[in-house]
Length: 184
Image (cartoon, rainbow, N blue to C red; front, side):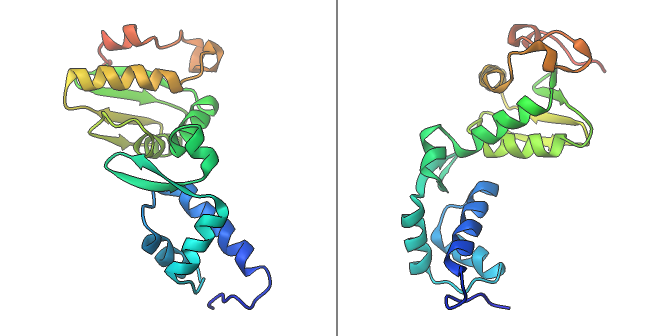
């Protein structure tokens, strides 16, 4: 069933849906928003999306090789997805190991996919990619310098409270991780 403008609260529901869409995925154009809203049953035009974006105070922020929509609040605090990554890492302890030009991140069961997606959407761009299993993810790099830059930035997302780490292990300091090898 298509949701049209004459139904009560359609504008509010449409705008909530629009905010949810930009919070969940990097969306770079109004055409993308129109298509995604159509998929959710909203009959909208690009002009409607443009008005909604203006009313909601949405802005375009740089993300990797393009610009995406974000709320003004998210843009003011940096990359909209950095906040999500920071929150995940506050809730899910992560240990870091290293093997060559790959970092091995070990977290709680079932969380690796969410962490990998948050990394991919964040302003961390030195990685070639991520590969997630259930509780373990690999972050792959092309060069040693890229790995080192990424690790230093990633550590700023990690909580500084050592008690948040699994098994009471010490905090994974960047210098220790950078010079160690993951167990084989």
